[in-house]
Image (cartoon, rainbow, N blue to C red; front, side):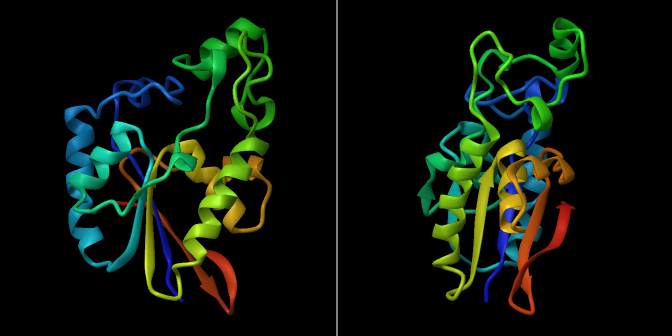
Amino acid sequence: MGQIVVLRHGQTEWSRSGQHTGTTDLPLLPEGEDQARSLRAAMAGWEFVEVRVSPLQRARRTAELAGLVATDVDHDLVELDYGGHEGRTTAEISDELGREWSIWRDGTVDADVPGESLADVGVRVDRVLERARERLDDGDVALVAHGHVLRVLTARWLGLEPESGSLFALPAGRYGVLGHEHGRPVLTGWALG
């Protein structure tokens, strides 16, 4: 049975500053391009039967620089829609609300324009995982996307609720490996790169 490699895009201006970057289509910084290139050797050790990428340029460019050829652009891999929290840091949102805010606990319902719920992201990534599972008998699958969506996807792979993505920090330009042990989904590597 194959494994799933989840790869987060390299650094952007907003990922460096901690601003929530959902659907804003930012390019990689030069250091983000270097991070992606540095993954090339690790990715060369895999033989992927499928490489699915988010439609956003930071993910597509990361895949390209890491030496991966996308077989499909998957809109279900786009980052969480933060609504009115887009482009803002956790500290800014917490200051405005007068309390500590967390995407994992509070979501986006308190934004001036509500965004996507973690439950909705969970539904999206469940579809991605279903498509990936269909290919695992043939080999390994790579998913190139964004921090929060990949963290929710990892939680769902392990049978956890979307909010449990809070447990899986994945820095820019790093990857994780989702596999099996005794027929059960497990995490076999994390924050590699």
